[in-house]
Length: 358
Image (cartoon, rainbow, N blue to C red):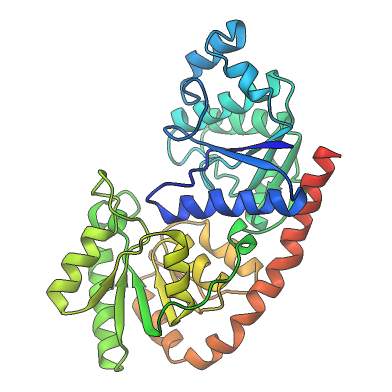
């Protein structure tokens, strides 16, 4: 059996995207142990043509000149991940349209298309809702990774077949690499850009929280979860190095997904500005305090029994984190239940994949 893991990269510097690739592949193999899983995204993978250009897809659908149609037909089914949170119009209509065009290309090839565990919505524009509705109704199966996404699918007239959770919980738990107190993931995207709120407000919150942790005698290591890339505005590495040097703090830039998960396994607490930094921590049994910049955090984490999400839009965010720091022992005792809650939710996703191949 061959399965295409669509819009997922297993060699990316963004460890959240890497989680999506590895976790989805692990989920597929839990359903079909002997499956060959192939990852394909915009600039990564063996596809014989650029899958992100709708005009190319139209030409290949008609002529198969570069062999894309034949290549897609070599798979038993396709898991469409939409990069985890891109089945929405918040990143622009063009991104939604291009990904949806590839989904339609898969369906035109006669290959079953499964919308893998992901965030669905929001769709705030009429055109976005129209594209979202079309894609949902064309999918063979639809999986939502949180209740709000399931509601979004239902509102578009195509309820999800499965309410599951994030594929990070399909990954094995590693041995701890070293003992650390607090790992603080600082986001280069939020530090350098106003796209998800004022960068100055985020910088002020991070510096304030670091001062609070120091006052409590906590030992902090700054953590990169998006490694060094040409896109320096998005990379966490440059920020944690500069901030670490400025404040005399250790910083960790992992070498791989396994490396960061092993580091988190050995920490007492993770503060994360990237959602998958927090999910990585929780999935290996370490308490995490998410600093959430979008609506995708809270419903997903609450569904696995972790309601401790701090919104960056909340004027009292710093105070909320301080209150949660006072509850370290409670958080440590509670985190073990998260993976137990996630397990049957992923079992439902596995069974859904088996039904497609059956």
